[in-house]
Image (cartoon, rainbow, N blue to C red):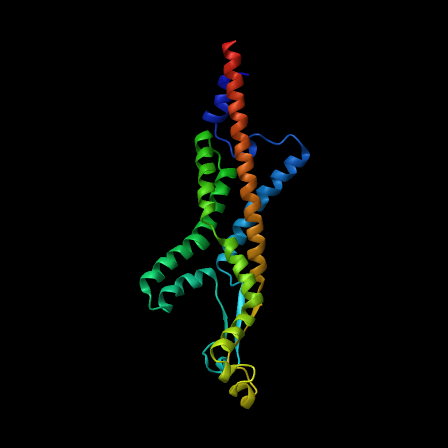
Length: 240
């Protein structure tokens, strides 16, 4: 194997990663093509998930008659903008808001951007290695999957939790046999939650997100090993 040819292939030529170390089987080619299309789709879905509310909350009972807006739905982006203005703990709120936008908005979108650059941008080994090493730490700060689990959990259990809070703190007034229920035949405060189409967008984006991440790590490591093996073989052949 010619050492100059190997070095020229990786260190002096600019090619996108999907054209390097092309799979030899039809299954491998099909898998890679599917992943490449999935990266584009997942980038769109991740952006949609950031700006789409996954759950709608309906406040009912007496409280629902007096609040300005009993039907509420918040996107991750809206929650970030609202956090500092909805608490007296301003210092903690700004830190929480920064952590929120970093893990649920910036890092998920940045991971998709790096994945696009890693696979589609023509680079040499230096560029490939840069994007490959970037995707690991950025992904560790992306928490869109945590938000997906929390949203589904909220949509399932929030009604029970709201009833439990009322029963524990205002049992005589708003409990199952409290004054309000007995006299007015109405609940004090109940929250019904409903999953929107944003929930499914979020779940699909998260699943694709992890599949793309693992595939990129595996193929990136494989490409590095192939290059190391070719360089060692070329050097050994040159010495002989």
